[in-house]
Length: 259
Image (cartoon, rainbow, N blue to C red; front, top):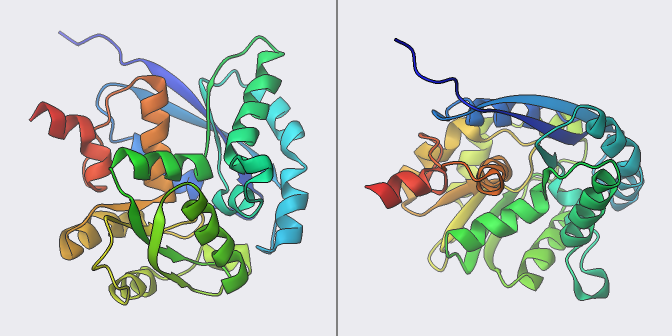
């Protein structure tokens, strides 16, 4: 006798054209869910170099991409470029992720659709708050001036950045090839004495998923990435149980509550 089929959810991903990691890590994470299944439907915004100019040009492609995602009738949308929004700061005193997520939701509402909408930027803020973290340390692939914009963004959201490292990689394709050993060694170099959480990869393009659990076990504090924060926020928004083993305590929230 077989059980009832698990509910299926379509996830729309809006990604930079040079990004290959989020379409690998997000399916790998959500495949661990035992109560639902997922498919992934992507649209791409052209971007090669992580610079303020290219990020603004990439964001200008949003409406076309959302129209394409709308054709797939998705249940949730992830605007999957953290720095593209954080680099824009807080126009009018509100984080760029808030305005972008609202604009995406409004555009889809015109088509009679109401999917869950989040962004990598908003998801990281949401996930850090969900862990109770007020002080975080960060590892980022960006050039230092861009990394400083990410630090300023998080601090404007009430999350103090106690230490951070920028790996100074401008080419987004190269970001997707950063070795895990380099990411782990960089995390080890941080001063974590005042941190409530470590963001091992503040970028959905820098690979980090295989490292999350091992680094969390080694360093003894919650370890998040842009990908795990995105998975957490998608599950939260869809009203699904947050229990994805092997990717840090953030993604075993409901398992821990039920223990």
